[in-house]
Amino acid sequence: MRAMSSSFAEAQDAFFADYFRLYPIHATEAGNHEHDHEWPDLTDAGRAERLSWLADARAKLDALDGLTRDEEIDRRVLAAQVDALRFDEEELDELSWSPIVYSYLVGGGLFGLLSREFAPLADRLTSAAGRMEGIPSVLAAARHNLTSGRGRPVSRFHAEKAIATMPGVGDLCGTAVEMANASGVTDRLRARVHTTAEAAAAAVDAFTEWLSEVLLPTVDGDFRLGRDLYERKFHHMLKATITPDELERRAANAYAEVRTEMHRLARELWPTWVGGEAMPSDDDVLTRRVLDAIAADHPRADDLLDYCRAENERIEAFIRERDLVGLAEEPLKIIWTPPFLRAFGGAMLIPPGPLDSGLDSFFAITPPPDDWTDEQVESMLRENNARQLRLLTIHEAVPGHYLQLAWSNRCDSLPRSVFGSGVFAEGWAVYVTQVMMDVGYGSDDPALMLVHWKFFLRAITNTLMDIRIHAGSMTEEEAMTLMVEGGFQERSEASEKWSRARLSSTQLCEYFLGFTEMTELEQEERRRRRDDFAWRPFLESVLSHGTPPMPVIRDILYGD
Image (cartoon, rainbow, N blue to C red; front, side, top):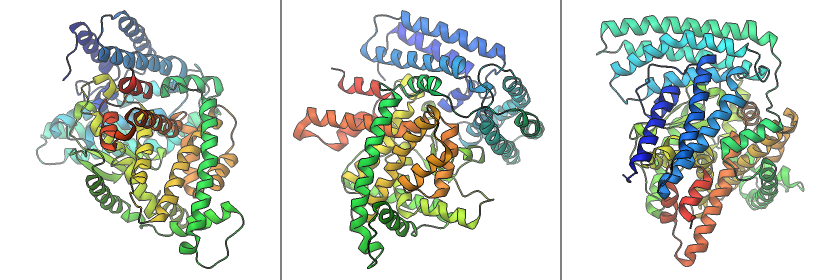
């Protein structure tokens, strides 16, 4: 543990004590369990208290002097986080116009308590009971906020998605009841969980009905942020040193380059995957035809988890053989995505917080919805074909998100660990997939490289869509054309991404932006090391400092 001056240590302790108190869901996610029974105060008074604290915290951070280099970097991270939180509360204010925020907030507040064994079951159920008792008040505040008329009009699309996902929160209440029925739980606690879960589930049902029958018929707000608000969010959330316009330009150039390489590879693969049939003159038609043949090789829907578990073992063996990077011993479970998170689609890594290091990480895969047709399910499985799942496992598990966050949770800088940068995390996962290709992973399977470029092309189209939707006027038809015709995606995947892009402004830029900046770090390392460049020292140097914003990791590594 690195030494800190007493003044900075005291300031940091005071900062996190207040932060965890005012943002108790984030506290649970970080592994601080002092407020596991509480919700954030979502009333006007609670919002005013948070804004007052943020202003005071910023002034105190600015007043610190005589700091070491490490302390100055940590102060920089804290100050940027304070500015982002102020923007979130004061300008973005999603609580007043994005109903799905409440699905994420309430679902996340329960899921973290029920899914991780950071404390005895009785302690976690006691906290869950406390939170379930507070759900009616949280949802009452939600109704007030969504009808307050402050700021932006309520987004109709976000309301529709909240209606679809809120029942997953009720399912979590049922999970708490099932857990309370286990042996070792006292009758008194079991009765409390049953009572609070019943009331909480009823409140969720009533809120969902209110969203559907009262709010939805009255709202028609746009899901687009608009250029001005989008550019401010881009700055605060991504800590980007370039503008959205510059990132869009880079993504457009990469889009053309990657597609050209895919066309070349598809021509080489045509005889193997299509046979003696004459090649089409249209490069896109040719590439799609080869990808379609490759996509036919996929597991059944019920076998997705087992396939990824087996592939993860193969990947780890490859990394050990190549001595590419140090692996983690922290437990990883590959699970179906919890229902309340399925509106976000696809796959995701749900890690323990830095103060809960050593607990389970969850590589979550979203199954086909129950109401999908056979044709829709097949389309999804073709997108998530055998080779795509190999790449997805690299991205989400090893050496992607799971490994990176396991390393991050060992970092002795609390600010860099707790306030993890999505650009760093997503950029690492995209970048290290390219590294795996560069060092020969799957070199015996040329079709894997074509699918890899398709996967990377998804990061590029994500960026183009995000900017053009929220800072422009991209339509669904234009987005689907970009993804399906330009990016060779299956229509089901593209449809889900169109939904996600409307829900998650700026987040879809993290992949390509982070990849670009990670690649620049490698280029700088190669310039400095020349013939002495080695993968393992470089990759571990990037991993060893938490999950800081990209300008910060560059300063840490090359600030001289």
